Image (cartoon, rainbow, N blue to C red; front, side, top):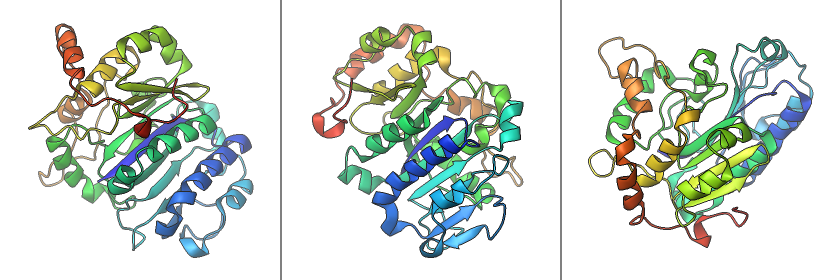
Length: 326
């Protein structure tokens, strides 16, 4: 289990965005360097696709040499072996210039993660990284919270573990976000996959739901913080991420109220989150995927009850929010 953030953006084929990605990694590396073990490149124009971290080329040098039709797609991980699942991970999946120009390949994505214990001991570090990355990349949207990290290069055989985990905890992310970013038919290019402890929405989305005044009125500042990232806003729901165990608190009000407010800008259907089952093992496909997407849904007539429940939830403090909250 980790705390993981995902940002969907575009332009990874351009020098400006590539340098922004490098800036994100350098900030992440400043806290994760001691833990990183491997660097994977996806389809490098030349050279190996895997390096021990200590012997890996500098990312900014590598990115600076890429042509527009070369792909900036890589992952730094902390697993002891290159195929291990990894608590510390920085993963970017980009598109080539010709793919971006076609407009049918979806969005680029950046994912970063850290151990839950590290985030607990440093209660604003995740928010700091998420918002700073958003200011550099100007994402279309994004979100962050609990996730079960599985091997990047052995994801398919490990998906059943993720499928079982989400049956027990609604706060756990599901699916390959990099692949989901390419599903333009779902509307992911303009709509949220889901909400999380942190949720990034662009300016168009802010206006679509009624503007900043609506956000302030529907999401009280004692429980919600908002951060401006230039191209949009990041919403923090509560002082810490919610695991939302289904037997105890499957629909925490901090998440439910954000989910309800952002109804108009969420994708209505997601499609399969996993590969198909081979031998009857659990997978998040078909209706189970749609159920996962609806896990924080409530009926309109339940809204007031959840607003009342919010009053009993822990409030934000200076120790759990960035200093630059709106």
